[in-house]
Every structure is written in C-alpha cells, then in structure tokens.
Image 1 (cartoon, rainbow, N blue to C red):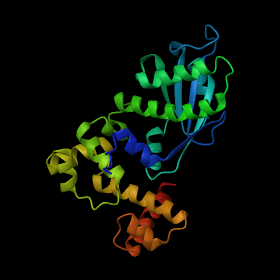
Image 2 (cartoon, one colour):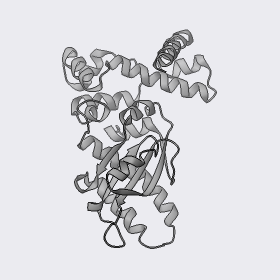
Image 3 (spheres, helix red, strand yellow):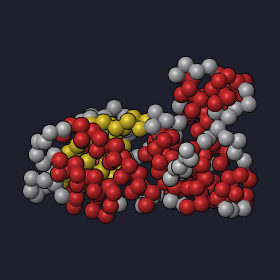
Image 4 (cartoon, helix red, strand yellow):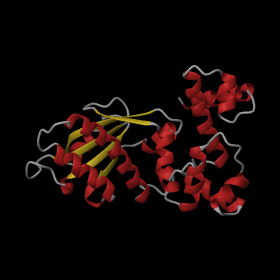
Length: 256
C-alpha cells in the first residue's frame, strides 16, 4: 500500500508528538482560553475571548492588563524531536485575539464554549479530545498569520521552504544535501540556502543536525544504545554522534 505524503502541519505534529490534556495549572507549555472579566451572557462569545500561549501560566500581569481572566487551560507535553525548536518560538507569551483568528481556531473555541454551557454525557472526554484539535487550530492560525517575519511558522508559510521542511520532518536521518533540498524546493542552491537562513535564522545543515541530536537524545533516554541511536539518526558512527552531543552540551552550558 502506498504511503501518503504528509502536509506541513501533519509532519510538524508527527515531529512534536504532542499530548494535550485539560489542566487548570499546566506544568510547562500551556494553552489558555481567556474571556473578558465581565462577559455578556452565560456563554462567552468569540469577540470577548482570546487564546494565551506561554511556557507556563505565570503571565497573570499580562492577563490583567488585557482585562481578561483565565476560563480554561490545557497542558501540552511534547515528546518529539521538534519540541525544542517549536518551544523556542514562544520565548515570550503570545496573545491571540479570536475575533480575527483563523476559522479553524474559532470553530474549535466555539465548540468548547458550547459544550461547557451545560453538563452532558461524555463531556470530560470530549473536552480533553478538544484540546488536541485546539492545538491543530492554533498551528493553522500561526501558519496563515505568522506573528514574526522569521522563525518556524514564517518558514512553513513559504510554500517552497515548507516543502523541504516537510521532507526533513518526515525523515531527518536521510542523507540530505543542499543540492537535494534545493531540488525539492525548486530553487537554485544559492537562493535556497539564503532564503532558508533568512527565514529560520539557521542553515539547513544546522537545522537538520539539531533535529537529529534531539531524536538521538530521546532514543538514548529510552534505553537505545549509542551505536543504534547513531544508525537510526543518520550519523556515520557512535563516536561521531558522541562528539556532536558533546559539542551541543558544551554550547548549552555556555548559554546557562
């Protein structure tokens, strides 16, 4: 049976391996639905709602400044090799006003709001599942309306660069070269390398190495030996992987 090529968000989600659950006080990355402090009517409307995205719910000052209060929160745990790259996009909390958000995002918020208006059978399970769809709606919004001119979502909004990101996210361990990536994008090597770095603020090679190292680390944590981890992530040998991990560890120590 032929396998279907993933689209840009499906490939991203595969690399993130997210687990979303309802949690009033998320420990780490959280999605928070906010409403006006005094919303009109029993069911809040989209015009009076916003979505706050932040690493942890320590942004009370921001919420109070916006005259909104937390209505519902979801905790997002990311187990995939793209997690560190994704989380770096949210060094600062991001507030998304829903009145002009992507349709997919507003639809899921409306579903959650309607479901919470009255107690119904299966409500806890539905709301937990709704968290997964909420994350997808958020990602669609960030690709259709990137919040910055650089970064992952700006790159995914670029059709040619996004095509290569999908290929990398699907199989980071492949023996990628600048030539094969530029052919995938339908661009010259020089143009592709320049545009990729301009958008991602990192070269294609460094981006691929970051994903491979994140994947190798997770394999080793899961009990996979260094030799097998190297083979699974595209490194020529265990010693090559070990040196790459050592360089990354030294760099991280300098940052902190």
